[in-house]
Image (spheres, rainbow, N blue to C red):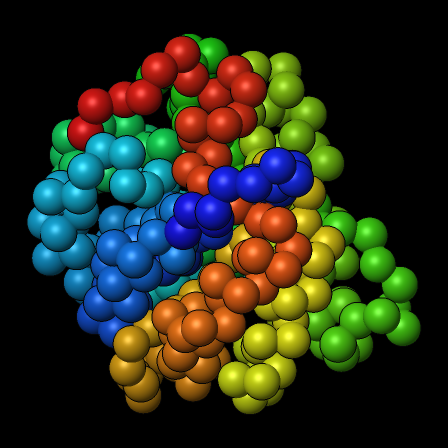
Length: 293
């Protein structure tokens, strides 16, 4: 959504919907919100049950409408999933040195292949379902694969570093702990690898919470995130247009969808002088030009 031009400086951020392809409710919400300019990126789960039909819809989008990214999956069981572990088991294996690097590299490569086969172009960015892209072994395999495929003109990588905040300022201890844990699980090391490879990243990650609360709670969170935003931040969201009983965060997804499509978002953008942009078009060094899709 473009905020009306004015003399005062605007903060520019990306807004990304995760889990595109996981189910139809997510796909429908994503396509609507992209169409209305309220988000600027979609993170695609290429082994999700509704990925194939979702990819067909994405191929018809104008190339400059949204960043389309690869949502690496090692934890979500899907019909065509590879070796899947629960998130706690994957974290434990990664930090215990028990992940087989050759298998991880092959899985990363196959997910890039599937994305490119479906959309006919490389991803604009890469992240991970439940932020697994920053874990040991996976992060090294990811940066190596990007460099092998694209050199220093590769996609930007999601940085999970959270804005600094005091515990007393957080909306809940659960949300505060979740933000801290995500950052600690590998943001710094992934940033070092990205810098060495010449790959761009968003400045910080905002939008993390415990998937609890009402629409009013989410509006308050959204207001706070936008008030804290600085250039290059990425606001992560998980909207869906319908309840899906098998999805454990389905209620939170529908709440997010209702807020993001409502009147409050443009009001908050104007209040905090924030503009939603495609990060690939703004991040310095991300690429020399816009890739055709």
